Amino acid sequence: MVLLTEERESRLEIPNSYDDKSMRTALNARVALRAPAVSLASQVTGLVQLVLILARAGTNQSTDAYFYLFNVGLVPIQCIIVGMMYPSLLNDRGMSRAGLARIRWLTPVLGLVFVTGGALWLTERDRLPVDLIVLAVLSGLNALVQALLWFKAVAAQAGGNALWISGVALPANILAVVALAYPWKSPPAAMTVMVGALLVGNIGLLVAMTRRKVGTAVLDSVPLVAPSRSGPFWFLGKSTVGYLGQIFLQSLAVLLPASGVTFLNIGVKIVSSVSATFVNATMPSLVHRSTDSPHSARQFLRLTVVVVSLGGAALVAGTWIIWPSLLRPAIVVALWLIASSASAIAAQMSYRFLTPQMSTRTILVVTAVVALTALSSRGAGFDLTVALCAYATIDAASALLLLLPLRDRTMSLLLGGVVAGLASTWITAYL
Image 1: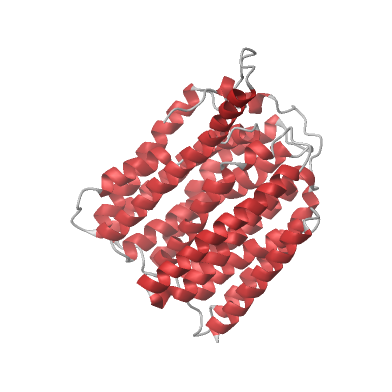
Image 2: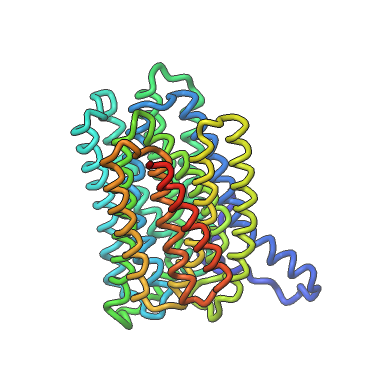
């Protein structure tokens, strides 16, 4: 994998000697496709990792513990770095250098704290036996290193270069696949060695990014004093409510029968992989600190919805043939693919073109859906489909409420239909 240095990360300079228009177009296209290609490689490797997890460890307490602690460790990263720092760098209201310095050290510490809390919750529910203690310790250290990685990669992303954020998990995934290639004697051993491999891969990438000074140019351009002190905190409020809501949903999923957390995270993995490949790797080139119009992003939204809809239909058809008992969850995941992609695109447009106060819309959505899920978890009808519907509804409703002020009526109507479909599926599954 060849990554651009920081000096060339925002754009590839084309010499004046390239007078032929077709040559310049081809070169620009090649540069634009690097991030999606790296992202696709990362997601494919992650898929292989998932298959090997199921082959070597199956679905049990070991896999539940890994998925749960891994996602818990990502919460501070998603809340603070992705949810607060990234939109603040895109938005005109910005963030100060002192604020970035606090984020740099606070996020890794919180990652370690969150994993510790997750391990204690699993212990309280008798879901973390002694042979998984080392896995929990390694998960905490991995969360710490991941936060340092994401800080640098997201800074580069705000400058228009998505290459590093697209490949932020690639070295770790590769080493995880290598670790799982060996037939370990037990699921706890397999999962523990795999998490150790993730940690080693992330440390190696962190060293490489530090040497290349990834994100330094963007961080150095941040003013000493922020134009607005309130802007970043609106983004922080949105991201905190959003991701804490998701981890609350993960905690409720622990109440599902054994393997429920694993199956739920398979759905999460599918959706997040598609979003990362088709959205996160492309949007920074369409919406960044210098973008002045949402037109290109709107066109990309329509193209993405068509592509993920076809992929969702294929997923439903394949599930119906191979695993008909999971047809209803597969339908929910197909709708979630549309909702998640639309939500990611709408969110990045809102960071640049709407005021931070618009974040209150998604805060209300998350609060309402989490409350409904908590009520649903008290009944006998709470199952995998209901849990998936909760995740998908958050994305669909958030996208709808952001696309309305962005004046995209066509996509707003489409997302309204997705919300209605998820609501009806939730009710019928629960009853």
